[in-house]
Image (tube, rainbow, N blue to C red; front, side, top):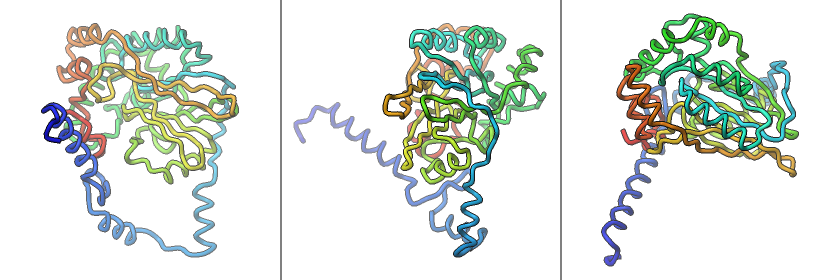
Length: 338
């Protein structure tokens, strides 16, 4: 051990510190905007909940997990589709994604909403969506812009997060054409597609709420299983958090947050992310989360010309979030630079 080069020892120390940070909240629960001891959280749940037994409990569980039946028509079937979220006005990444979709031979392209915010020149987005025949659903941005709301309804609780969200929304609302806003208001809030023989539900935040954050660390398997039972689907795809992840549940059903193409995934790289779904001969569906390279330098230059916050430009250039960090749960925040 004493013969290790200094840089190896430094890397070992860095990894040990990272593991310690990631494990620091174990034994605690996220309660609103703070962490509390798990025992305290459980005691509060006991005080506020109901205790049921026997058949009454079984009936409540069956009622809660019963399929909701949203009557949304199922599109497809497809063998290969591309799904992405969070354009955030990044028309350069959107153009690159459409080129990639053609290269990969995708039969259909779906966008999970949040066309605006963060980036420049919102009116550049719609022509690309139409040229690429992109099937789009409403995110909280489309809902707010179409309805003339005063804010983006992003779901932030922290004042700093909301400060930058207000700047982003104000710019997009002012710059977006009226007919584009009306078009946004006509978009569906969810879609269902069939890939192979599997049914896939597409939503923005979650099936429950358009601005609900489904982070990997705060979306346990039992919770996700219930969502898929309620929605009567084999796969669930969402976005909104800006961070991509995927998981196969104990039931063999799958959930994926497809990430966003509007800004990097807070990982120190300038690439953005999307998902490819492909039917397998086994009957299953493979979900591949794919990095996308685009002309981020030109995007940053355009953002500067439009007078967007320097913090937004820094994120595009460095791959590290400088805003909207306070919403991140402890594990995701521990991986941030700031």
